[in-house]
Structures are given as structure tokens and as C-alpha cells.
Amino acid sequence: AKQQYHEFVVKEAAVTRLCKSQNIMTVNGQFPGPSLEVNEGDCLVVKVTNKGPYNVTVHWHGVRQMRTGWSDGPEFVTQCPIRPGQSYTYRFTVQGQEGTLWWHAHSSWLRATVHGALIIRPRRGVAAYPFVNNHGKPPVREIPILLGEWWNMNPIDVVRAATRTGAAPNISDAITVNGQPGDLYKCSSKDTTTFRVKSGETNLLRFINAALNTELFVSLVGHTMTVVGADASYTKPYSTSVLMIAPGQTTDVLVTFDQPPGRYYLAARAYASAQGVPFDNTTTTAIFDYGASSSSSSSNNSPAMPTLPACGGPNNTRFTASINNVSFVLPSTVSILQSHYHGASTGVFTADFPANPPVTFDYTAQNVSRGLWQPEPGTKVYKLKYGAAVQLVLQGTNIFAAENHPIHIHGYDFYILAEGFGNFDAATDTAKFNLDDPPMRNTVAVPVNGWAVIRFVADNPGVWLMHCHLDVHITWGLAMAFLVEDGVGVLQSLEAPPPDLPLC
Ligand code: C2O
Image (cartoon, rainbow, N blue to C red; front, side):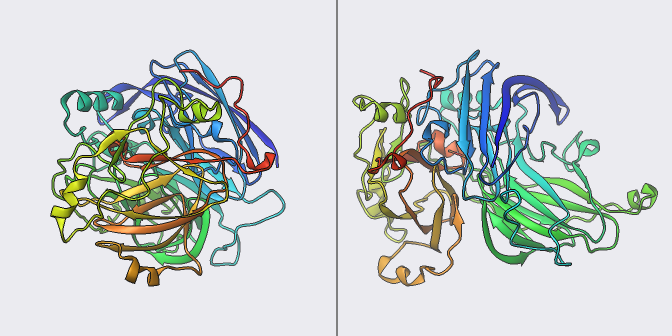
């Protein structure tokens, strides 16, 4: 294990997409931001300096942050924002996790452009990947693929406009692959992301859905993908031609370039926007090129497009969202973690987040469910004893819109025991629990009009946000926080706050 030091300077930079140049927030002037590559067991030290006009924080999405909650990053939950001109150094060890994670701003909607990959390889000289290519060897090349969204407007202004008018925020103007919209969008074809790969080789593609509000279907024409990991946990391998990746999730796949030499389209298509508007024609493309070396032969073959499922939903008219009828409100003068650590929660948060909703939600008796139409705003946490075994039933309660919610928990990975449609019914659905080899994730896409049951052990003291990873929903309050108390020994307690922790 070693220590890695990085400097992130958050600042505006001019970037041109879709024929329009604008100043966007970046890290070190890059969009998407730098990829960090570590080995399991490494300690990361990242000094973030804010040279932009907005407050910012950085979250290391999926990193467990054992006892280092001060480095988790969600603004007003574990720290106050880093103000323009200030710096804060995040320090944490990446332990017990291998695969693909990412980092992103956790402040307003800045993560639209402030994000990058965090790649965790097996521990140096000790471990190897638990998968091989078609010749029994490790994959030849690894390719991080960040799927994102682009607005012809500053994303902060998109949120501000929505808050002012009370309307749903604008949908994005493009979906992107490694920052480029691809050749189905105007002015984008010459910049389409192109991966030059070698015929016959097996590569590891590391997909990250960094989009703000869009679930994506991903496909590579003519090629089968073997899924080997998700959210920095290895999975039982399976083959598929289409991936569904929700915002916040990552998926690692092996692909062997076994087709006739040529150029093959990778496409990612929006499932539906957060507003429920079908994203017709909203498909981003990139090209995998293993054509013959004389480019003339490959360029006159225009690449084939994969077929992707297209789904839409009705218009969404709810502009608040809640969990157990509480619509989450961030504090503004201190972070929840700071006030908890100093035993000064009065006026900041209360520990009365309800263990159950006031009425049991029921899709078939929606009049009963109307009790959930008037959520109460509040900064409420749910307290957990150190070491508690936790089971959560995440029940979708959409009435007007059919959407799935990618629910993400900070500071933890969890097992997904079962998922289903309709109402969760403990009497019959418990029998469906997979207690043998449930997948481990940090983000679960709760099915449209359905439910998911997850479990974790509360072995990480601190304050941990749980929220929908559609940013439009977190804006509306689809979040809550767990307060995990310290255990008995020093190794079971939260570390002291670092001296440079920003104040509000
Ligand atoms: Cu990826 Cu709370 O976020």
C-alpha cells in the first residue's frame, strides 16, 4: 500500500459542445476530470482548492470511508462547503473494494461537470483479477467510459431557474461519452469519442453513469459484454448485449473484439428523463475502431448502430419528494456530522426520522396512500447503534410518474436481497430473498413501481446520507441520513475532524 497525493483545482474553463462555448466548472481545467488509479489498500490524499465562483465539495462515490466520514464530502452533511479561495484536503484509505468507483462534486448540481473515474486495482503484487480473457490471461487494456449529460447552460443556472419558477428543471441537451455527445448530435461528429483497440484482444470496459438525471441503456454493436463487477464489487460473471446503468452506478465488463475488423458503435440511450419525458433521439455514441490499418477501407464502412430498448413515462408533476413522508432539508450553518461530533445538534437536526411511513403505501388502494402526498420538510436522521444489522425495504411510491429511483448510501456497500414490482409484501416476498450470493452495491435502482430489499451492518460510525442519485430528486428532498454511533473501542469510533475542515 502506498500514499498518493493529488491536487484538484476546481475552476471554470471554456468548453465547446453542440456549437456552443461556455464556462463550466472543471477540475484542473479537464472535462471530464482526471481519472485516479489506485491499488486496493492505498491511501489517497487529495487537496481540493476552489478557484471557481461557487461553493464546492468533492464526494468519493462508493468509497467506504471507514471512520473517515470527514472525507466523504456531501455539503452540509459531513462538511461545510469549500468556499471560493479556500482549500480542503481529503484523506482516506481505499480498502476492501476493487473495481470502478468515481468522484464528483456534491454541491448543488456541480457534479454535472465536476466528476471523474476512481479505478481500484487489486493490491500490488498480492492479488489479481478474479477473471480472465478468452485465452486465460488478464484483460489487455482497461478503458474507463464516463457517461454524462451536457446542458447548453450552466447547470447551476438550470437549478436556480427551476427553484425560482417551481417548475421541473430543463432536461439536458445531450448525453455524452467521455465528455463528447457523439455524431447523432449537431456539430459533434468530428469529436466523437473513438477507442482504438486491437482485433482479437479482450479489454475491460469500466462504465460509470455520471449523468445527473438519466438512466442509460448501453450497447456495443455486434459484441457481447461479460459483466464482471459493479460498484467496486466483483459479480458472478454473466453475458449480455445491453446494460442498464442508473446514475451513480458503475459496471465493469469484458469485451473481446472478435468481429471482422471495422468500426463499431457504442451507444447509450436515455431510459427516460427524470421528468418522465421520453428522451427520443437522445442517444450518445462512441466508436470502437479495430479496422484495417489503411483507414480508407474502414472509413467508407459507416459503423452499424445497435438496437436499444426505448421507454417513456408520463409527465411528472410532483416537485417534492420524500422518504417516509419526510422531505429532507440540508442544514446551512454547520454540517450534520460536525454538530453530532461536538454534541451540538440543537437547531441543526433531530434524530426522529420515522422507522416506517405514516401509512403503508399501496398501489392498489391509492386513496390510502394520499396520506403520503403532504410530506413534512425536516432535517431528520435515523440513529443506528454501532454494529447493528440493518434491513431496508425501499418501496417506490410513484403515483403520477413511473420512474425508478437509484438509491445510493454513503459510507456503506449493501447486499440486494430481492427486488420486485408492486407492493412489497413481507408475508410472501421474504421467500424471494437471495441469502446465498446477493449482489453487493452502493446504489440500487429500485424498480419502476416496485421495491428492493437491502441489508448492511452498521460498522462505520458517522453520518451517512442516503438519497436518490437523480439530482433533480435530491433537490426535491428524496434523501435522509443515518447517524451511526461510535462503538466501544477507538477503532470503532470516528476520527477527530481535520484542522482544515471548512466552516460554514
Ligand atoms: Cu454519488 Cu451522494 O452521491
